[in-house]
Length: 193
Image 1 (cartoon, rainbow, N blue to C red):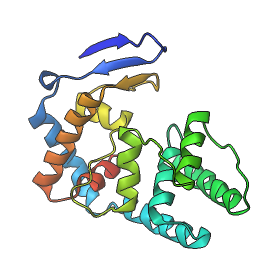
Image 2: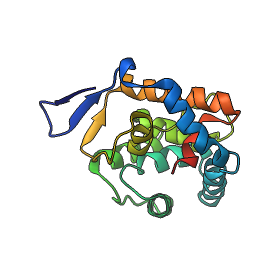
Image 3: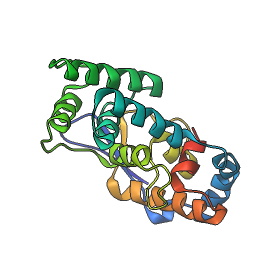
């Protein structure tokens, strides 16, 4: 594993290489979680919530999922939902409020206005998993916990980021484990929370 500092920030970027991962061991570890994945309806429940919010505020489901994902970094799920609902409520009244980081809020309002906006690798997977929780092609959301499980690491501080190639490699482990046990990759990932 290669760790280095980005010149423009204090975020530590980590690159995981194929040789850093014991795929068989990781799949076996994730299989232990897979028994819980059968009963894990986390994303199905999140989709139910998003559908009800979309109807309540007369918004497309995809917009609700995207806005919710944009507001999700470093935010506990119930707080994430409350913040999203506050944004939708204000938007319905023709107001703009700020409930998150400035960049996130710019993307939130661009999304609501139908303008281009950016979802990162993690938030993009999160939005898609909420939007279509039973889609077998959805990639799992790779957060610090997902990285910890696959890499066998202790707590990973929020200041550690992972390169997209590293995220893709860890996603591959989750996808393989899910196939082995016959569950969706996102339900397996949710079972680890």
